[in-house]
Image (tube, rainbow over all chains, first blue to last red; front, side, top):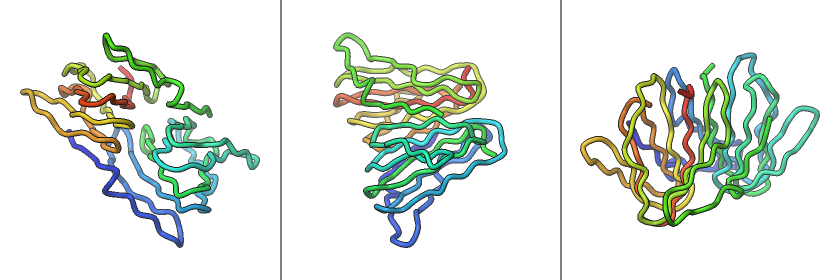
Length: 105
Length: 105
């Protein structure tokens, strides 16, 4: 049992989004990405079975998907995606997301 | 790919905590529990391998563990626990948590 405090990884970098590994185990990996307003986590996918969640914990923007699709995303929204399905994030304000990947690839 | 909005399950019940199943798959299950101030999600565990996170998205209180242990919990705190390790939640204000369980048992 361990406690993670998201307040400890609240850092934005004006040059590129920030990435913090919060937890890693055979069961899942938890990451925090912080995007300053205007930054993009480009659409990508991995050739692995499994799913992930992208949980917006601060700010707003959009979830990105294949074919330039954009799904509006505000604090409290959670995207569920296959790991092998194209996904990304675009920040219109400073924006923080928690990503949980199961199983880790 | 699907989007879940936590704003849609923001319901508190004065009699007992509320439970909303947000997502279920072979990879993980995601639930939202809403505890009104003073309510308790009693310490429990399940005889399954795997881990879970309890992510506080609103309010504050404590994470509960075995032997009456209490770990202070505020918005933005995430507890990582084995599924078979005793865990629970106590709300000192109205409190919302998102629980992710991998694999679902």
